[in-house]
Image 1 (cartoon, rainbow, N blue to C red):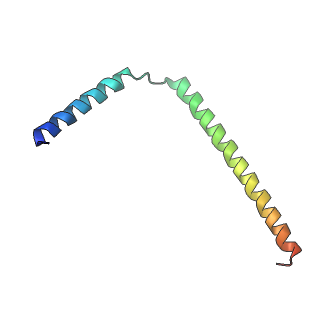
Image 2: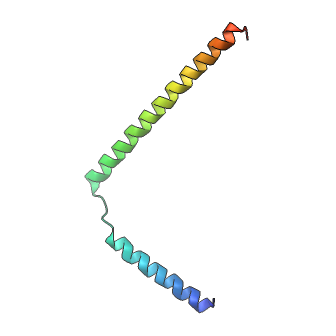
Image 3: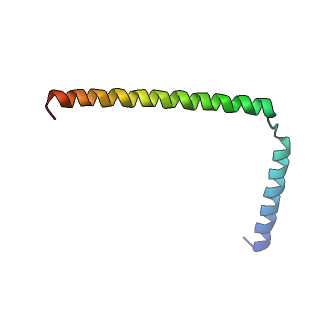
Length: 70
């Protein structure tokens, strides 16, 4: 492909991208705030579950190791 063809393809891509970005419905502040709070809540919940699993497995392994005197 010639250099001119690549430049034209790049230009077409950028123009189409700009057109698509104009079609996007961007969230307003309350929607953005609510979505952020939902994400933070789920991150906290998943972190708590992983922490509980870690503590449980660590306690179980320490108990088993204690039985065998290690």
